[in-house]
Image (cartoon, rainbow, N blue to C red; front, side, top):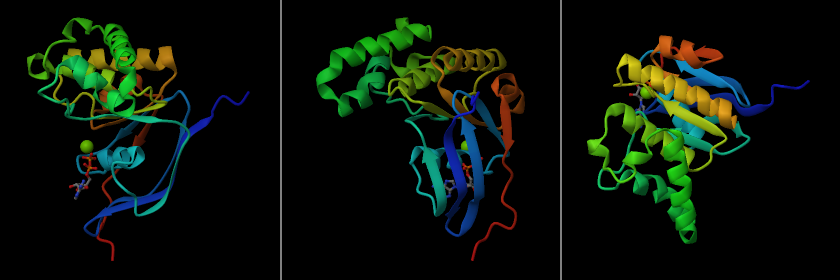
Amino acid sequence: MSKDVCILKLIDVCKSFHNVKVLDGINLEISKGSITGIVGPSGGGKSTLLRCIQGLETIDSGKIEKNGRTGFMFQDFQLFPHMTVLDNLIFAPCIKNKSQREQHIQNAMQILQELGIEKKSHSYPNTLSGGQKQRVALARSLMMNPDILLCDEPTSGLDQSTSDEVASLLKSINNDTGVTILIASHDLDFLKQISQRIIPMTLVENNSCH
Ligand code: ADP
Ligand code: MG
């Protein structure tokens, strides 16, 4: 039985900022449907790695092979402050496909319901708690129906019980939809709660490249 289908593969990926090497030949294979944690110190390149996978940064060399769509959940939520929760959710889908607005709204309301925050659909982000904002950020990334969900520090700024909620939420989404999840976090305890596999990322030593 070939259970492990590779959905994401990184081959010798390198990335520098202003001659400072942040990713030094990263090789990684992610199985479809898995939850993988990437742990490491601040400045270790976790966010850069996720951003490269999402295509928010270009890589200097190597290769990233994706067998599906990726969705990105930002560390600081990056919700539009002047838009309601619902408008935040339908913003990108409506740019992509304007004529389907009603469908996007229905889809958004269903996702909000699944995440238990449908009552907040007409609220503005600044009226929400950290945990609620995180749910909205998660809902927004799910709107694009990703095959791979990239979560950058999903528990930063959240207290312990809210972190636990995020852990069980991500687990149940993985369980219900089969979406592959890749989580970057400095919080090893959190990653241990949900990941089948944890990959350490260390600071690149002597990281000047000439
Ligand atoms: P982590 O998420 O593990 O804390 P990051 O990927 O955010 O690490 O950062 C890794 C290193 O790359 C840090 O030294 C950071 O300052 C640097 N870096 C990240 N993004 C940029 C950027 N856009 N321009 C310049 N340097 C950057
Ligand atoms: Mg980071």
